[in-house]
Image 1 (cartoon, helix red, strand yellow):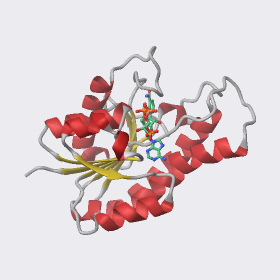
Image 2: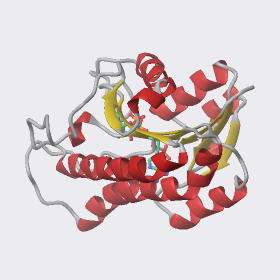
Image 3: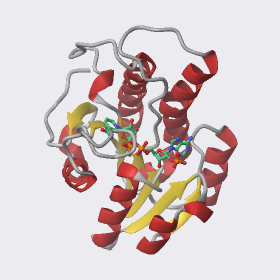
Image 4: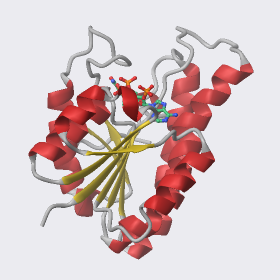
Length: 224
Ligand SMILES: NC(=O)c1ccc[n+]([C@@H]2O[C@H](COP(=O)([O-])OP(=O)(O)OC[C@H]3O[C@@H](n4cnc5c(N)ncnc54)[C@H](OP(=O)(O)O)[C@@H]3O)[C@@H](O)[C@H]2O)c1
């Protein structure tokens, strides 16, 4: 029986690779993106494509309503933005900061609420693409401060979701994909999307043993 995999932000980068690998494995992939008309690579995969802008409440509500009653085995909350690039603590336009926080924190919180019933129905997994840059316990630089702050805040959302949804049989994980060659990671990154996503899929498959934690693409635990 194929599993249903819902991916937020699947038109490029790691989200597209999740869609490709889960489709290849024979799963029922619901891949979402902001502009389906431009998602030619997703169309080639033959997966179901839905419109979703994770920074907009009405967009999340509309998709949650459309998928009402579905059993969702895995929700991959992948959509994210880096925001202003800086090497040290620095001010930034308020709207730049707000966009990072809305996309990386409020969006995942709303996705959690919108799809909790669907994932609980399957006693499934919610996997959130966080980043080691959000780990306060291992922080050694102030670069990309808006992104760091947003991923640390996302980690709080993930932990809270694990406490609440764990009671309903949902397994909840924060994932660090490694440093990956995507538009965000850049060409110097050490991992290909194929390698990173293959590792994260194994971590997700092992979610029952890892519930409520923060792991990299090899399954190694990362301090919050
Ligand atoms: N690459 C790395 O080395 C790395 C390391 C640590 C963590 N991560 C995390 O992994 C996740 C994926 O990263 P990536 O490297 O694949 O990034 P990417 O290449 O920049 O792709 C980002 C994806 O997020 C989507 N997105 C952004 N804002 C959205 C919104 N409001 N609604 C819906 N989709 C939205 C983008 O869609 P559009 O095309 O519409 O913009 C795109 O599909 C992110 O959460 C990132 O923080 C990546």
